[in-house]
Length: 288
Image 1 (cartoon, one colour):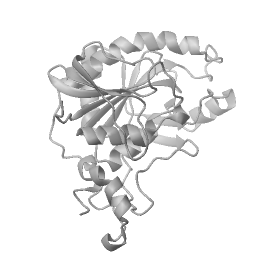
Image 2 (cartoon, rainbow, N blue to C red; image 1 turned 45 degrees about the vertical axis):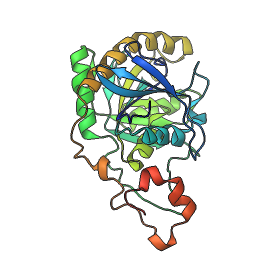
Image 3 (cartoon, one colour; image 1 turned 30 degrees about the vertical axis):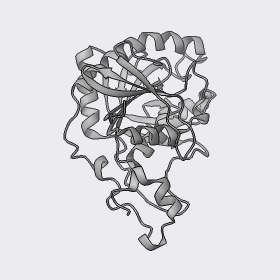
Image 4 (tube, rainbow, N blue to C red; image 1 turned 90 degrees about the vertical axis):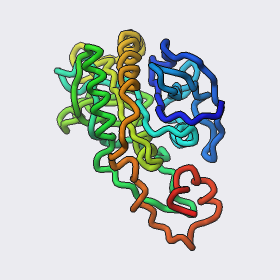
């Protein structure tokens, strides 16, 4: 099948598949930036064609620092995706955000190191606006979908993106809390930046697994603790994502849809042919 797919789903820790996906086919995509985390599962969900990608690969074999974010998002772009719903396990930095709650954040704070988070450079430069890192329209759809599923919801909040793969020290965790951050994770920031460059609407369902280590009852966050709550979150996350998919497509009147319109700074005569060819799926409508 060669049809385009407008809805993308990224499954994070614990969400490696979705039971409701029907009429499945695998798409193996090679990109100019290397290979994605694995094959995209193109399938039907609630009557819509979607593309599902397990962020960490089959069997969870890729750490956050090893993820090829550029390939993952570029693959979605070549499939025709215009909306990405991502699910991600996070720790809570607030007492009232409890394990098994879902947060739909509206801001990021970056403390990753050395991760490539742009398609541009090497012959073609662009600077997209990123003041509002999540698509507001898609986030509202996600919020309504969480409410419909009956899960405990927190609207908005700042996702602190750390490098990992180690969890925080107590000193770090308390510092993040005092700075006013709400949740902590290791993956979503680069996805959001690259999706914006690719003019794809993006939002996150942050699935809370633990209180990080600041909480007196969680001062030793373990994989076992996280996995136990991942299992509890997975079923709810699938329901929320399916609810959201039912509400798509919608008119793309957000800034995501035209993020590159005033962002490309390289003069046309100075653009390298290699860069234009490499980035054609992303810049083709602006660069001939």
